[in-house]
Amino acid sequence: MAARYAAFVVSGGSVVVVDAVIPDDDAQPIEIKADETWTLQKGDTSSAYAVMHQRCADYLRENRVDLAVVKASAAGAQGGGLALLKSAELRGAIIAAAASACDVKQLAKAAVSKTYGDRKVDEYLADDAFWNAHTKGGNLRRMSREAAMYVIAARAG
Picture 1 (cartoon, rainbow, N blue to C red):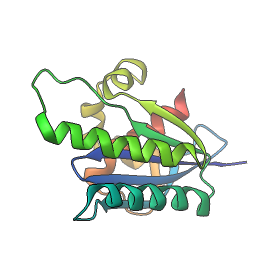
Picture 2 (picture 1 turned 180 degrees about the vertical axis):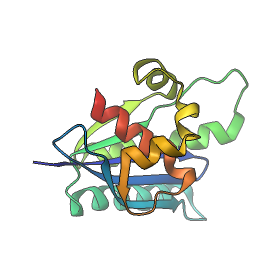
Picture 3 (picture 1 turned 60 degrees about the vertical axis):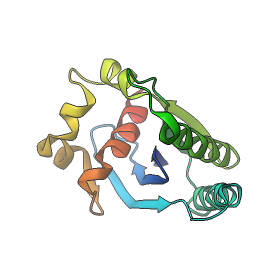
């Protein structure tokens, strides 16, 4: 039976969400069911995180997602300041919400580059032929390829 995975990439005050059906046959491409960006509401951040938490948990339950794949935090060479901390807070809300609804796996971009295929993630993101071969269904935005890459990497390993 096919599985359902959703990937979340948090950046600043937004979350790119890619939802896909994973066929049993590993040779078949994943089917993109949704590609969305959720934006943190303005105003009180505590309330905004609560709304995002609820939205994520509801989405995963309503769509019967089996696995949520979240891009893990990465220590950058340059300090990220407040923006990096805000992203981490939102990522935490997404992880907590996902854990309330399904299994969760966190994947770091560097780890995917080392363990999936023979190229770095950024090289896959730029390769249109790779995406044509590995995805079908709904339109996957170019900016959402990184989230889809986490789905593909989670499927492989």
